[in-house]
Length: 320
Image (cartoon, rainbow, N blue to C red; front, side, top):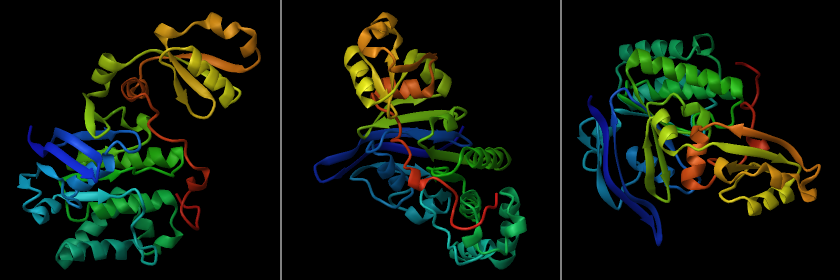
């Protein structure tokens, strides 16, 4: 298969802080490639470099056959981007947003019209093409952003946290559209996400931490090589969680009041002591998952718990 993206020994620093420390990888045509990493791991810097928004200190990138550092405009013609923060103009209609994007990329009028119809149909927004985006729900805006990113027929789609802040049903719907366009348009997709379950079906998962790639492979391969069985212990508060963290080797915090303990260091008898009486809500065994792989390799959760103030759909409207 053809490598649509090739990164070689990418390095980047901000003063004394190293953001990328010799990152290299290849992404083949038609691949679903997921980039996972805790906050501060270097994901944002890497995405910015791949999108030609930032130059690395050293290293090289080839995108769709073009040296992205020497010829960034040629590389950009092959890239569509959906940013984490909404960037559509909510004062315009869906059609007007797409029309403007087509003009920016120099698409002739007939081509623009054809593409607008095509991408609106793909994300099921034809019915609302003349509605002002301000009235759209969060999910509808996200779908419009995906449609806009596809207007100029890119070969590669970058998705930076495409479902952050959306409810579970809407997130599932977004991934349905993304899977469909991958199948129908042979699109190569690179995704960053804080929801590990969303990349269980990815072709390749790449885990980055402290500016370096620490594991890469298929989800099944990573689980087999790095996965561990854990016991999840749900407690009544942080204090009990902290006590368990101190008692069990390799234990990791999970959320506000839960903890996961690797199977090899778990001892149910220790939890029957008086100090834990009435303070353990539930204990359950967890089979190897991508989340357990991530915990084993980084020692951290993938995401901080969501800020309740960020959850919900966009301003105005209850449309789906």
